[in-house]
Amino acid sequence: MRVTAAVLDSAGGPFTLQELDLAGPGPDEVLVRVHSVGICGTDLEFANFFPTPAVLGHEGAGVVEQVGERVTGVSAGDHVAMSFTSCGNCPLCLTGSPAYCRSFDAVNFAGRRPDGSSALSRDGEPVNGHFLGQSSFASHVVAPARAVVPISKEIDLRLVGPFGCGFGTGAGAVLNVLRPPVGSSIVVFGAGSVGVAAILAARIAGCTTIAAVDVNADKLDTARLLGATHGVDSRTGDAKELLAAIAPHGFDFAIDATGREEVLRTAVESLGPLGRCGVVGVGPSERMSFDWRSILNGRSVTGIIGGASLPQVFLPKLLNLHTAGRFPVDRLLSYYPFEQINEAVTAVRSGTVGKAVLTL
Image 1: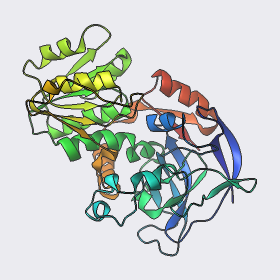
Image 2 (image 1 turned 60 degrees about the vertical axis):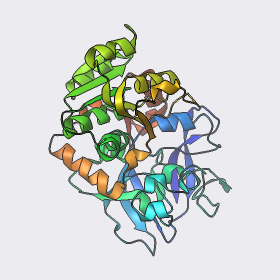
Image 3 (image 1 turned 135 degrees about the vertical axis):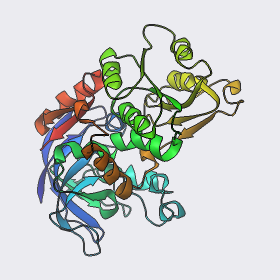
Image 4 (image 1 turned 180 degrees about the vertical axis):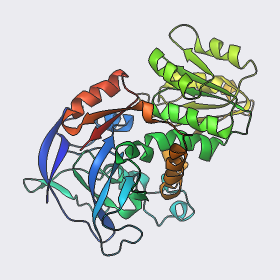
């Protein structure tokens, strides 16, 4: 079938809307008509080096139009959110940790199916896709059944997509991995959509001191509105000193959502004894470094993928929290028609929006 997709023909962009051919779903795949898709920092980071031509996008939501012959649990007409995929066969997948699948990179970042084929093509030549199980910068997606999560038809599909990555990553880092006890303290570096999701989750968990650190005053204002007890603008002073004034004995937990080496160093050094830092940011730094004394007193640093979640279980729980008014991410969302993808990307890169969502 013919579909419309935002194609990346050279590293760094821009995206151009083009007509592509999309093959039908295989035995374990589903065809989804995309209604909305969020733009994530991971999309923009991979746009710099993902093999082209390519279709990215991995925060999609839509309606199932066709399912493969071996697919169970989802049917044509179902509303779904989409998330990462996994092999389903390794010990980590089989024990409920698909975010750490032993084949995670191979099935999410190769640009092809495991057999080397691509569902997308242009003029008879394959186009790289299957990005994080989706490549949802397109009107339609062929995705593994493991990458889709059925949701209630009463939920607005326009807001669902970011729950599959950004919101799920931030909230899952807190609720699934750090699991702060009631009354504990946490500092979140980066007050974008992932960081604010972590802040909301910290409030749900019962943290009583929740500090947000950013260089964008508007984002800090939003973080305070959504649960941060303190906002730290690191442009106005030394973040480490400002945080020490909030938690003189150090924070119990920290989240780095920036992917920047110098920020992660500050995050680790802001912890108290036995403090834990979760790293969720995909950013410009290739390495992390800090003085060995920074972790000598029992501090630990944990890398976190996809909120360490089982999407089919965690994503509906987050949506239920949203419906109950306890995870109010709506104010973060800014909507753009699909044709304005490059304008939306510019807004994300400039930090003028919390979460850009393309509507189709």
